[in-house]
Length: 130
Image (tube, rainbow, N blue to C red; front, side, top):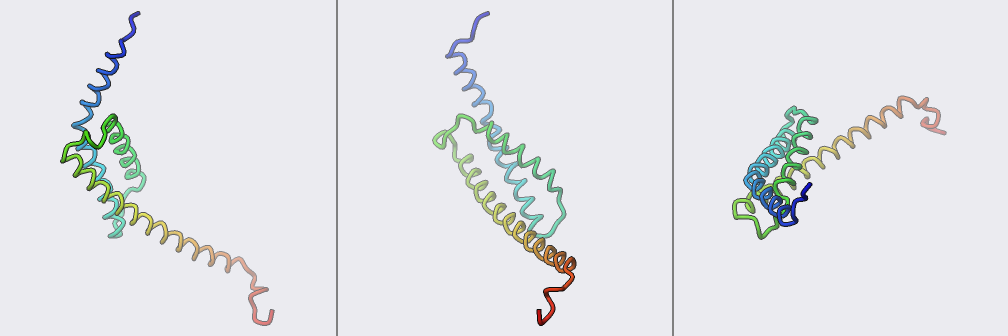
């Protein structure tokens, strides 16, 4: 059984990178749209499927990793750089909105925990004079 040569492996790897390159812009745009959709839903109180959104984001991040394998910043063309810059801004905005929502959920959770604690208390130590 003949083993492929080292140069053959390098050639195949370069071909794979070349094949993934057209997918890079598409994947960046899909991930950006997914994040924009989630951010919009959160900002405007729209109902959306959190699980499906998470699955889509994970898939697009996986696809982005594959499409960008072997590329460096010098190997990107101007449209790719522009789309990556847009994606970066979109990620920052999405992260900020998610952080705000997690904080709000935490505050509400703490409030309800206090209500539960009060309801479970018999009031022995909360009466004036004790």
